[in-house]
Length: 191
Length: 191
Image (cartoon, rainbow over all chains, first blue to last red; front, side, top):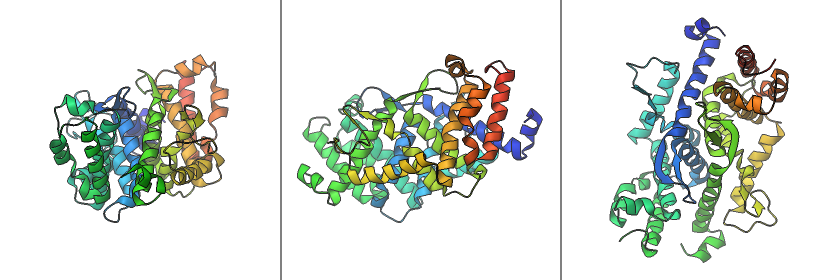
């Protein structure tokens, strides 16, 4: 496909633009998180985290506190962190200045999902958020609580920061509280 | 939840086992692939790859050669590589010897999806496979073709190895062929 065809938004151009989006979000693999792998060996990145929370949603769907459209939750979790990509001078969701190959239409569809995720107004966004919060909590526990001590957090603070999990899944929040109590019992988290 | 409850397979035990599965597959983040990131900076791992192909399926679904259940394709792609986890002495799908916390029931559901992926008998598995093959092809092109030259591959061999993409999406295979021709034109791939 010629460059001019790619710019017209016709069939072939649309595909080029969709793939441009995919190539652009590859940068998520270079955005490091505080969370360490379960084995504690290194910090994980946003792409790895996004894969894991999407997988968690599939495996844990039955524990959602309300009926959910699982496919929507998974799509939401796959893209929920792309807002963290700093595309050099502009932000991936900064429509004004952006002049890259990322297709506006594709961007708009994903931005809509991202806005839903942030709003917490739907059962899907509340369950997605529960996955997004439960995942680092589990990793912090299994990798020895280093992040908690690094940030001087105690049981009360970690509880307060994560009780939003209950809005997506009371069952998983009850479980998370047990994990935190275990962490206190094992000296990984101050009481 | 007590250890004995976790072993009985009741409600709380089931959750422990589902989370055991999630913690186990975290090892996918440590399985390196030949493929490099789009920016060429390093090799990617199976978790990053799985995230990207799942995302590709969502973005490129309209190009599937036959009607597909997109949610099934995405689930398939999220788990398609867990067979590559070498759990020390046993294989994640080696039922006989395995004595870990990974829940057999969960494992069975995921294994069924994995078997479908491998069989290529459904439209979903053919589209999933197209994503799985198109992704490294695009990365190899954008990161300068180093893998192709490392393995002494030429246009004919790369075409032969990837024409399976056509079974999932004739449109994406036509696009992939254009990319390979571009690679030849740019001296990244011998003719």
